[in-house]
Image 1 (tube, rainbow, N blue to C red):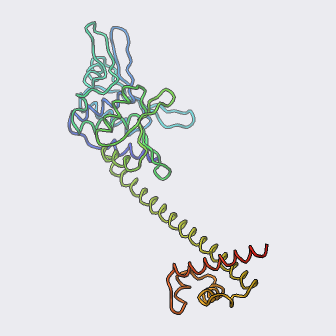
Image 2 (image 1 turned 180 degrees about the horizontal axis):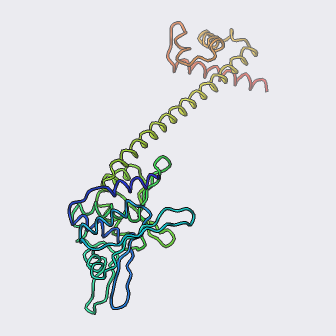
Image 3 (image 1 turned 30 degrees about the vertical axis):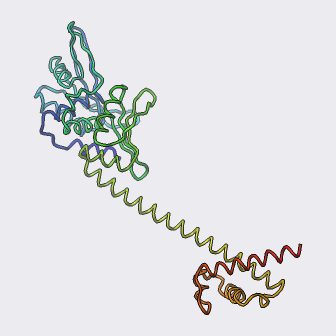
Length: 318
């Protein structure tokens, strides 16, 4: 089971007691995954389709808890491409469907008794902070997904209306987040890509188990990245030290061949001999071998002097 499915299963089990929160969650589910069917004489029905049994139970429970009406549940086996079952939740009685749609502010009637669809999110549905959390949870159950955090950090809500995507993004951002919207084919996608913000949103929706799992993965990835960074840094420093040592030895051997290192000043003779006999030693270690000892910068100064002498000798031989 994918990380996204596990998260939805967890969210589908969260108990909701307040009617306002249940209504907000149901409103989000209708806008994200519901479909309205209109027939003659102003009859209307409401249908939901999902492949997730937990979400189907959630929708059924929300409707029964709020309205205690007759709700049809159908299961269709999808044989094509060996996909999962399709669960259909249908409110076929026109007055019941109409009441749900009016209560959730999805539709309203004008003076001519025509239905007007409201694609945005009315303030009355998400007036309370708890209702905002419930609406976001319903939107995720109806049309959201989260990537496997071991691969990448990405959480998104796929909507089919621009106004709804803007309103949903605004609701999410009231919690101090920075969701953005992108147009993908004919859908408007509200998304978050930062791991820390995704963790915050999971907490807002109430997916605490998914949150802890994501945090564990984030910590492991961060430790792994830090270790790799340290190893790469140490490897680069080691390579730099080795290359410098090879260059210093080459210069000293050239000086010895051209004029003999014994003709150098005494302080340069000492460091030259130490470098030849301790080729893997660091500058600090070379400095400690001298009598009296000198610091790293002093050793580096003498080795640079030897390099200058080697360059001068090469110039003379040209």
